[in-house]
Amino acid sequence: MSSFFTSRLFFISLALVIIAATLPLYVSGYVLGLLTVAFYFGVFAMAWDLLFGFAGEVNFGPTFLIGVGAYAAGIVNAQFGWSVYLCIVLGALAAVIAGLVLALPALRVRGPYFGLTTLVAVLMLQNFIVVFADLTGGEIGLTIPDVISINAGTNYWIALGFMTISAAILYGLSQSPVGLVLQASGQDPVQAGALGFNIVKHKLAAFIVSAFFSGLSGALLVFYFGTASVGTVVDVAVGVNVIVSAVLGGRRTVLGAALGAIFLIVAGEFLRPTGELATFIVSAVALLVVLFFPGGFLGAALSREART
Image 1 (cartoon, helix red, strand yellow):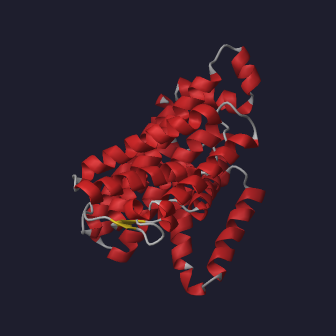
Image 2 (spheres, rainbow, N blue to C red):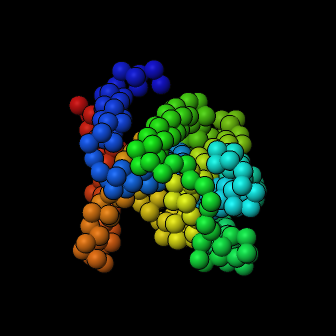
């Protein structure tokens, strides 16, 4: 990990963060709002990459953890009027508990069954939101009384700071001995188990960490929007965007997942005037990256640097 602080990747990342921190001084509120959402999606993608890229568990339902954190925080604020930051913490804790309940049985199955389990969890959460509409707002959505801030610059800096800290923690974890065990178990669980590593315990830890950051980011996002709905935090299409973001940026890079999310959100928004063609263009780019650059944007760059 110490070599990272002398690598080209560290200095490029530092330069990008410094440049990003100055954007509120000379860009419009529209651009800041777009990047604020992109930063939260960046955390979604990084948390997903920790579980899939390193642990090798295909999670088709990242929005289950995101949705639990978002709705738990929003419901507590709407029902009891508790402070925003307390509700955000409670949302993250709710996501961890839900993730633990889901992971304990799900990690006992192998192959595609884990992914199907997480996907079913998303569908169950969607049905729960619709059935208990009096509590969750149903298909209309849950209106949240409070927001973090009404200032675009403040919201932007909070999102940037949160994504930067999350990236540092998740990347550090991925490069730690725990991350190496996860990577080994993802590539060859039988051999890793034969070496004496408790594969289930390490994957459970990765799932809990992923749940915490997903739930925390989901709670922050709804307090930025001022509302929670199935379409913004739970829908399967949102989960697909998270997965595509991580693949675009580079699987098993963590930092690349954030870049992929920012690219996907910004590209989709600027192509919006093209109508339905925007989805086609973004999907085509994602397909080309998967076919010709399996390591994603950052993965390809790191491989080129290593060869050099």
